[in-house]
Image 1: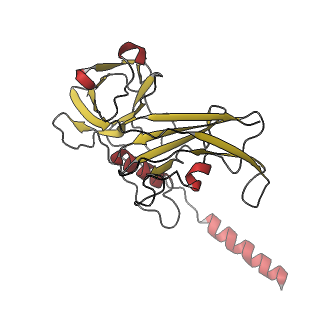
Image 2 (image 1 turned 135 degrees about the vertical axis):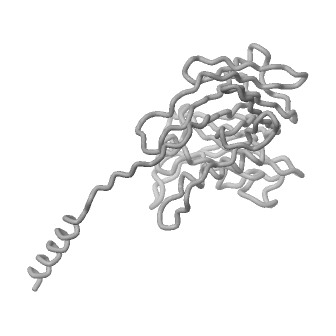
Image 3 (image 1 turned 30 degrees about the horizontal axis):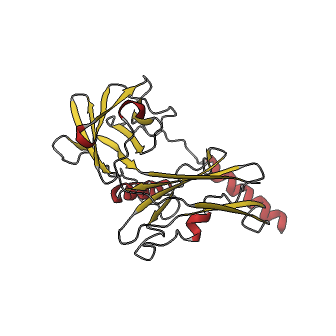
Length: 290
C-alpha cells in the first residue's frame, strides 16, 4: 500500500511539472524619474546629495547616476551652499567653504535645477538631545540572542513638544544592520508614538536596539550611535519606506510611490521627482568594549 502511494505521488508530481509553461511578460518600462537622496545634517563633515534616475523594475543593473543638475541649499541671510558634482551622481558640499548647516530652528531650502525645471523643498533644522552616556554589559546566549556584550545609549527627549528622531547604530564604524538597510530605528519623542514618551529618557527598546542580537559586541569593538532629529514629513517618508520594504507575503498590497516633499518651483506637488530632502541636527557618542 505504501509503495502504491509513493507511485501515485510521483505520477501527480510529473503530471503537474510537465504542464508548466514559461511565460515571458513584456511590460512597459515607463518614463524615467529623477531620484533625490538628500539627507543632510548639521555636522562639519562633507555633505552629499545623490542623484540617480529610475530603471526598469526587472533590469539587473544599477540605477543610472545623474550629473546634469545644479544643486544648492539656501540658508540664513540667503547664504548659498553650493553642491559640486563629482561626475558620478554625487554632489558634495564642504562645510569649510561657508560653514555647516547648523542654524537650529531655521528652514533651509533646497533648489535643484534639472532639465530646465526648478524643484524646491524645505526642511527645518530641529534640535536634537545630547547623548549623555552609553553603557554595556555581557549577556549569555538565549533562544533569541547570541552571547556577547550589549550596549545602550541614554538621552532625554525635549519636553512639551513633538519631536521625531532617527537612531543610527554602528559597530566599528559600520552600520549595525548593514545587511538590512531598510531596517530603520525611528521614534516619536522618546518612544514609538503618542504622547507617552514626551520629555522622558528614551525607552529601553530604543536604547538597546543599537546592538544586533545575532552579532553582539566583543572585547575591542567600538559601539557608537548617532541620534538625528527629523521632521514629521521625513518621519512619515521613512516609515513608508520601511513598510514598503516588508510588503510581501499573503497580505501584501500593491506597491505605490512614496510621497516626496520635493515640489516644482510653483510649490505644486508632482511625481517627476522621487526621494526626499531632510536636514537633521546630530548627536553622537561611542564607547570601546573592554
